[in-house]
Length: 106
Image: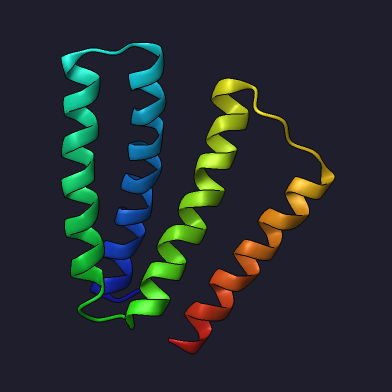
């Protein structure tokens, strides 16, 4: 795995953490939850822009948003009892297939 792909993977994890931080602001609003979201925003954008130095912009953004959406959906199921049915799983699989396709073309 190249440096830029590793950075992109870390950006995806940061994106998931950022989305979870928004939920934390809803459930426990405080200077810490708001500040944490702010820090994650800056870190997330920095990592994504760094990854884009070595990965085409459309590929990097597609992978980042796709895997971020899959990750936060799974986190919502595990942490917040969000629904997960067969249709939702099928559409998540389509997102993952798209991400794999983008990676193969990069």
